[in-house]
Length: 561
RNA sequence: CGGGGCGUAGCGCAGUCUGGCUAGCGCACCUGCCUUGGGAGCAGGGGGUCGGAGGUUCAAAUCCUCUCGCCCCGACCA
Image 1: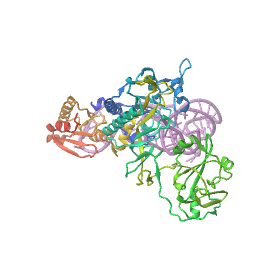
Image 2: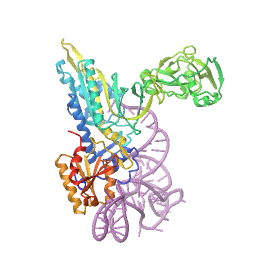
Image 3: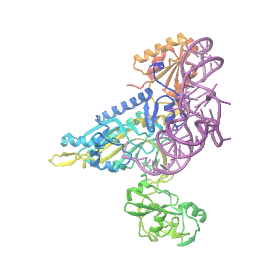
Image 4: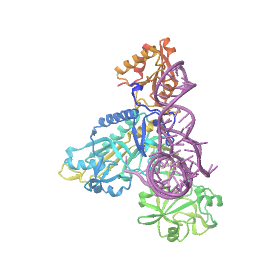
């Protein structure tokens, strides 16, 4: 492709409202443009990258026997009502009515529709297993689209769904997807982790996420260098070293106006880990007192698994429920449900005394209060691995894929059943598996760039090489560059040739920004000696090669087919 | 939804507090000359409902009211 014929609107300066590196670079290099919040257009370069990612997805999905299909984005409400998600999902679902007043929605995912199809067509165990996938548009009315292409309201997703006769059979498809996903992300040149995750509104028991480490990410994962345990911090199990404290007698301490852990900690000259933090929450079934160690943070998601949806109590509610003002609450002697973090099980602590301006030192679990014990604290860097005790690392990551064992969560309500060998009806056992191609692209940029621009992994690059004839007014340059361009193209190598009548500096800057991994530079001086330069975008190192040898050298760089 | 910021040419910005001249600067764009190894130079030029609506005023980018949009933090997130 000739640069002069291609729409590549590069920018010298980044638009002021872009902040994530991938967003800035993809805008500046002319890959994407924004239409509105969370809505992006892919320009020719951006679309080429997407096409390459999708090709990898198709190859790897096809390789595990998945079959590509295509479903509508516009769905009738009834199907979503049958699984309960029409009501369970809030404003995030785009809803509308058709001309006759029928409730419709735009698909944010396709479990319902895939399952509906299976319910119509699958009859017998002989029809199973099936794995169906699509690469298709999803719409979600995100509360806060952000970070450019990383969190949008409309995006394409590769989503696949497996249909099996049993949990054991599902395990096979789950494993096949796991392996395919590893190959996909590896081929895309990403550094990534597979972690245990919270199935959330998808339901089901087991799920994993594929995460690309990047400071632009929105999630955090805990990783154990010891045993390899890795999980989203939403559910990562960790412990912390216990306090070294002697046998404190129970004593009341006057702590005037000292409410927060920090204040009391300073006042009593004891580190926060010696304190208990009691937080009153209002769940659907009434008030719940959650207790975590003073140096730790309550993790709302973990708590939700135990008590369901909840909200923090207001000041008045605290006083009314516990008879004491916030800041001096302790878990002792209340009638409400108490859920305490396991870190508090051993040792002596300081807690609110349930008496204004007093704390109680020497509080001990089970002796002074009882509670349901759960892991409800947020895992942090330096916590100890729940499995092997090694120190955990916490990393910020971009979620690029996820896989769920759904079981019969969707097949039961939608009546997706089959007849087993003995003629009995059974619900189909399902799994669902997603990958966000745009996030792969963004993560690749986040992980591969320098101050000058993008450095694409070869597998994702919109072109294999870029040719830079530095002076388009020099006939020798143009002739030599054009010859190589044609030879490479004929050989199936994708070439971008910057044939614009621009100065050398402009071409170098744009080439660095666009990030094609290999540049071939035709300069007048070198050409006089019969040489051209092959430059590696990442290392910025270049070698001078005889004109006649360039073709061969480039061929050698291309991955074996 | 709560908090904060911003909307002036394609991009980056100044001007707004303290109302007043033909609304300005850099880059980009067009024409010509010149130049061709890291975003050149000279000369000439085109491009603006100052986000929108209403109001105050002799006069509004500037003050007031409403409204729309975008970004960031938080809540939320298949």
